[in-house]
Picture 1: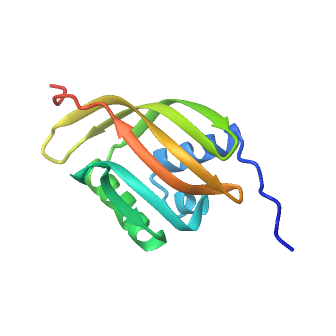
Picture 2 (picture 1 turned 120 degrees about the vertical axis):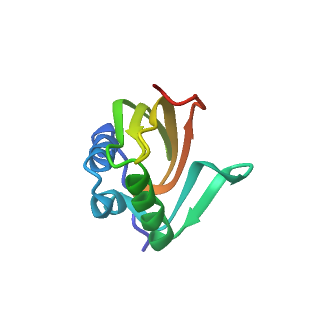
Length: 130
């Protein structure tokens, strides 16, 4: 017998955002399906760079935190409609060379069985903040 789909809530998405701000990759992955997909906002392809499966997604998130050791997604606002949702945020972070980034963006989600199956990230393209 198939399990009924569990509903994703705004509290669940806030917990996901909190895990990102804590730079807790294990907590982040606990919100995602085993076959999860992360589509980064930048990369060589028309849809950025795509990471598939827990190991690739884990490495991608670890790279984000290595690139921006102070990465923070502030003022999250969450929206859910059926098996889709999105979170708007303001990203701030500083690279090791001192380059500071501050941009608005959002994540588009596809949910499966009460978890995030696809995280498709978008953010504004802005010159570094001085």
